[in-house]
Image 1 (cartoon, rainbow, N blue to C red):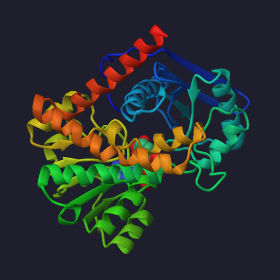
Image 2: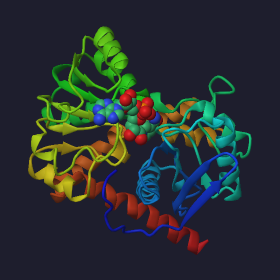
Image 3: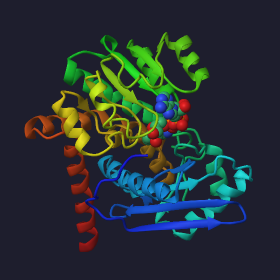
Image 4: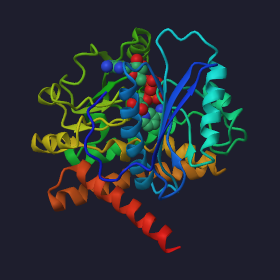
Length: 354
Ligand code: NAI
């Protein structure tokens, strides 16, 4: 996972949990509750060291603060990681129920949902122990809920349309887009791009998913180690973070980077470097907010229509950030960070005044 930068806003709390009976080992990082309960998914990963898991939770929870603030949600930022050994052969349901008890012990300061490595099924197990969980199956039609990935894909797609119009002056049908990672979000995004007429390059370690995209969308397969540097107009990172790093940055031929993966920049300084190289970077947490928008609406009992309305705001919001970056000459990630921090600071001031 990527290196950590000094943080501008300190974390409020970091909780470590162990449950010997189920084998659960988890970290819940609460970065900020200035705007509401700290919300962010639960990542399940095989970590080489505990420090790597904690580092991931710290970094990802801070990203959630910015993402939720920027999306205008009444939520702060948090994240959980479950350290799962590669050879785990215990009872997964019991493990997630135990994790639910950990969430419950925080009395609503943290709200969990799916992330990489966890599923709707897992969240149902969590829900056996706490109400502070979302990403559960829809209970009524018209109500928010269920897999948040389609909303994430929709937000990324809308943002990409704006980026292509502003940077190339063309619709997506005139572009070549490389999708790295054909998971829940990447595959849905590839379907939307194909429908819009874009030419697709696709990459995943999962051969079956690649074959599916080649078959369904006429996409061209690219090896996982080649996708970041392949010739294309737009790179859509939809796998893991830190793909814009010291080793890859010089090889990027795309002129736009716009995708769902969290923490795409190895460090904030890589954002400035991309700008210097003439590569437009759409801030990850701005464009991939569709999932948390859905999770938030579900948690608050809101409608699916309210989710769609908020997701539709992602494109225009990116447009406003582009205007500001053009005016100020700053890198896009720095403009977005400044906005998000201001929203959090305003929320904190309002709370103090209340
Ligand atoms: P997923 O786990 O369903 O899919 C990830 C895919 O990437 C898998 O198919 C995996 O095989 C592939 N992959 C991993 N490393 C790769 C590599 N080096 N090259 C090519 N493919 C690789 O995850 P999901 O839900 O689609 O999320 C994708 C990214 O978007 C993650 O970073 C996640 O944190 C982020 N995200 C997801 C949201 C959601 O609603 N699911 C919301 C916001 C962010």
